[in-house]
Each structure stands twice: as structure tokens, then as C-alpha cells.
Length: 401
Image (tube, rainbow, N blue to C red; front, side):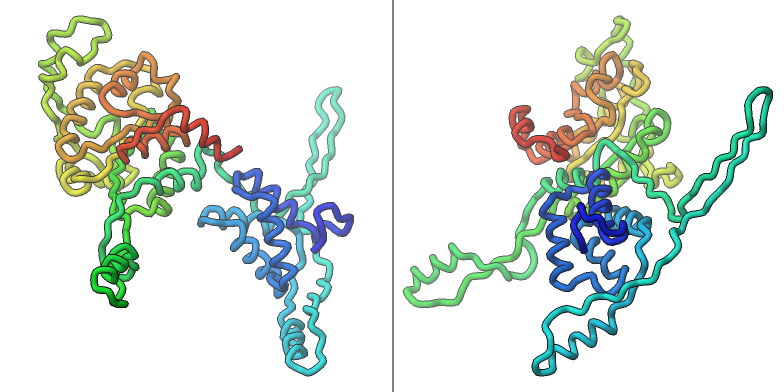
């Protein structure tokens, strides 16, 4: 392999453009990662075949299923001839076992030239009026185009934020050394007694996500799906339950408490004590909202003692103030308090869009954060009982920078 600045044929240094493409797709790679690949190649890895080299890049640079898929597709776009160096490497290994054999690694054979894999298409535009005829020849590559969604949050950022939601409990067989107990036991007995073992700590944190679907949340379906997938696959939580709703999880709050409100955009502060908890509603087990389940059963099954996250725009996307939606939401939040005190609200819209909407009033009754990296860290800290300050977030810096 040559350096990125070599003047050899393009196929001999395609790893550097591949590395740059991965960086542009927000892969957290630095010079050390590229140098690690060079050292692995010098050590003899990735020489057997083109597939072997691709797998080597995947092991060093991809950390999730989505990143592996992106790396595979980008790797296949480069017109690099395939090779099979297994017989040569096997012969080199046999020579090493013979006395006086050379210790150098056999170089892979030069592969024959292959076609570029591009299809030429000729486009002809007929002459119209005074405009002359236009003939253009365009080459379309046969390799598929890699379409990577450019979301405000990456899979890795979501995973790193929610791995901090931990509730460690020692469970299972005693396999970890309890150093303090061992020292105390030997000091008490005065002999070299057996060591004291303790169960290993395991994360027993449970999470319930209630995700708003359809309507004004339609533009955010891809983002919410990516967030849910990252939390489920890489959050390292004991249990994650997903349920979906439209606009509000519970409907049917007693509207008689609103009769005394005469303002144009009233708040619920004066009648808050009169609002009865509401948990009669329907949520769904699938994003298409086709598998209904009673909200009361879901809360009793998945919300008891767990952390609860509500993912919805809360009416901010349309910029409207809906008093009935606010009433149903507040009644539901009061019912949720009987199951857990740890719940937050994630809004896919930035805070500046909450003004003069239902979201502006809902945030007064539940910790609401924007669905970005800083907002997720603050939400996780609230669920952990440790609110994060703006100064601490500034010290943490931006992960993408």
C-alpha cells in the first residue's frame, strides 16, 4: 500500500479516499485510525483477497451495523481488481518452517486489468426553433449509490448518551473479588483465609418510550426511528419498551374544569388541582398504529419503577395552542406520577419553535428538552436525578468537532 500522496494508479491508494468519505459521513475517525490500518497491513493482514482487506477496514473503522453497511457499499464503489493470495501466503508459511527460509511476507500477485464498470449512455436533444441539437455522452457507474441519512443525531451519539442511564445492582453468581471484605476478613482471622467474592454489577435500568406518530410528527419519523433503534441496540439497558400514540397518549379528561377560564389562551394553573389523573387511552405496539393496547395495561407492565420518555412535538410543529390537548396531557402526566417519578419529554423541534404553542405550556409540567445531543444528555441526567448545567455542557464540547 502506498501513501495518500503517491502518484501510482488510483487503485493502489483508494483507502485514503475511502477514509475521507467515511469522515464526511460522521465516522469518528482520526489519523490514528488510518495509521492503525497501515500498521495492520504491514503486519500481514488484509492481503489474502479484496474481501479480506474490506473486512479488515470494517473491523478497525466500523462500530455498528449501520456503519458496516455504509463501509461495505463505499468499498465496493472503488474499481479495485480482486485477487487471491492464499496459495502464495501458504507457500510463504511453508518456507518459514524450512531452515534458512526467507522471513518476508509474500506479496500478492498483480491482478489483471478489469473494466471500469461504468455504462455509457448517449443523450440526444432534438433541435427546437433556433436552438441547435445537443448530443451528450454520460457515464453512469454500475455500483449502487450509497444514501446515508444526514440526521441531526448519529447512531453513536444517541448510544453514548443513553449508556449513561445506569442502575447497577449486584446480581447473579459471586465471581468478582471484594477486596475490602477480603482484607477485613484476613485481618480479623489473622491467617491467609479464602478471598471474598461478590456478584457482578449489572445494569437493571428499564426504559419506556412513548413515541408520537403521524400528523405533524411525520417529518420526524426517520429521526425518531433512528433514536429508538440506537437506544434499543446500544443503550445497554436491561429492558426497553416502545409504544406509539397519536397526539396524546390518553384522551377524555373532564372538560368541566375549564368552564371558569375566560382568557383567550388560558393556562391550567388555577384549575390544576381539580384535574383528575387520566390513564384511559390507547397506545400501539407498532409504528403503523395497527396493534392497539390499553394504556393502563402498558403503564402497569412497563412504567412501574422505570424511566419514561415521551417523544413528541407537543403541537409545536403546527404552532397552535390546543387547550384540550394540554388538558389531556396534564391529566396523563398526573396519572404517570403514580407509576414513576422519572419521566422526561423530548421534542424534535428546537426550543425557539415552542413559543405560542401547546408545547410552551406542557414544558411547565414536565422536563422538556430538544431532541439534540445536549438535550439528550440533560434528559438522561434528569432521569438519573442529576440535572446538568449549561456550564458543564460547554465544557463537554461538541462530539462532532
